[in-house]
Length: 313
Figure 1 (spheres, helix red, strand yellow):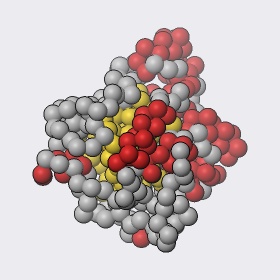
Figure 2 (figure 1 turned 180 degrees about the horizontal axis):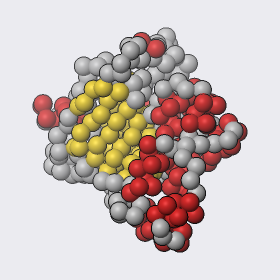
Figure 3 (figure 1 turned 45 degrees about the vertical axis):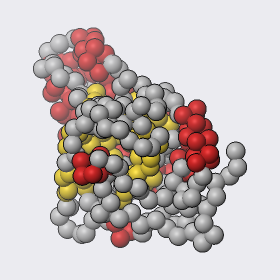
């Protein structure tokens, strides 16, 4: 495959806040609008002008329609979308007629399906099957990106949401699809390559919220203070049950162990703090690690990036 072609004079992309999300465009006109090309190689990222103003944080809430899988015919096989959010932003529950691959060029966002919360980073994306009801949020300054896959032209990677590692090759192919003037034959070849390399990741930043009365006090405490140091045995004593009872309940309700669940909660909280510009040492202390090195190792195991690499991504 030839290397991607870029304009002779690259310039940074400045996402335009008036450009609608493709699902919003469907509601307006029935056809998704074209979106911007990605940042050309070597060009700088959007400047800090996208940061929220000093003072009380501004939160923006958006609504998108609920559309059944395949309910609307679209002309594309794969279509890109990207935006830098100026404020902390939340999207209410909605669904798309097409599949969606979510990832970030910079910053942190999350997607919620039922009691499951995925954190999306530059290294870990999320495949959202068409018709899946979900909500989401993004921190101010996050440059989020998405690729939309036609429901009738692309088999879903999974019947349920699944994490996808955004490898350098996958990123390169997705960016190539954004190039203006890409010929139909080149687009077809590139789309085929995207589908060939796209696969679920064995690693994901997922927290399944427990819902039982037994585990709710633990979940509430850890969400309020991810640095909470209480052990499984200490929680068992407080709740007047055995440690084994709590372990079995965590496995049944969350699909993972107490220790791994705590690590995931801490990692999700750490991603948000790092995206807001906190120093690594301060984040480590906030989420309960005794040293920045211990935090860094745990963060990399979970997210695929070191804290420093995440901040400069």
